[in-house]
Length: 512
Image (cartoon, rainbow, N blue to C red; front, top):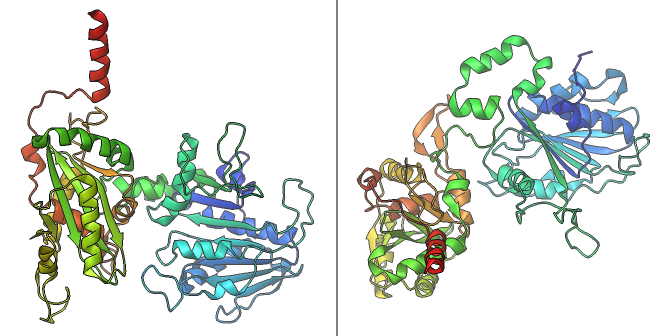
């Protein structure tokens, strides 16, 4: 029988003592995620005899090549009543105490893109659910929500630990490597932000019988999710010495930070690795207030607009402005699929223009396809170009830069923090030239998930993933005629931010 060392106070021990409804084990490669999840499942299977449990991975090969084998490695053979050797059979392990553990894969043959079809996992009620490698691209947020709705088991607990649920236990236990997809946005980031006193609307928290948020003694929400995360080093006692040395020698830069140290902020293969919400995302209120200040000085404000056509896929419209220092602020916009009438696109653009006072003579940098006759992306030469339809309604468009690599290079210039450059709103130094309103969540989500394509050997190609990229195309169009950052890096007198100017005026008034 294999031996797994779990030391007092270790990350693995803390995970085994988790009691929240959702328990997430993340971090570096080989830090014990899968093994400890299997051990956890076996513990619950013993203490809730007769329970119906699920162990899942994204695809059939991953399920049987990793999770099933890992489970058999730790489950005592004399506990098993039946478990077909062929994974092509029922793939259900039945223990002698009546507990069943169903090994299933989540990806369905009818799944298209990010849309999940009805899963055969949803035909059952489970007492506990375990999903290994939740970050796999085949698993989407809807899968998580669907499975969460299946935790309705009520099998009695027979152990003697008073901290355990009397029935169920109705726990969702998942493992993940650091990623920037929905797992981070929907599950991890809200918990991280709660630790620094910020309450994210996406935080999964306890509610009372009236549906109101339950607060702790510090008047903060009580989450139903807890996160256990650590580096590969956390599991060093269960690894061969040369394993970690090999990772240290092989992984450099972002790969080292992500897969060895288990850091959520480092991701290999991102098109825009410089994007950092802490630097680039600002409150909509602060950006809108800065916009009002600049409108007083007409020579200090240049409006920027971009448009990417979409019918079945989302169309995207972004509105922003550049200040007199060359900083660009993305302030507002629209992003929606299946809006078939071009007139609806036009009306929404006009509405935002009216709200912010953008002159109708301002040019929109747009998808070059809209200047062709017929439906963009086809060779049918029928009907008016969409650009003509826009023009007839008083909206003038210019062809945006459609050179992908050139556009990406330009956007990256504006994202990279520049030495001694000052954020004109906060006054902070070493800041970038591009800022995004927190209202534009669709933009933030896209840029966080925008990766380079890879060939069959796992090597990166000079071509970004061709999906969920409509906002990314739009920002490239918007920056078509903006200067390169090198032309903006001239010596400037430091700008005093508004609140400091007000304070100094107050001091001068008191001196008088």
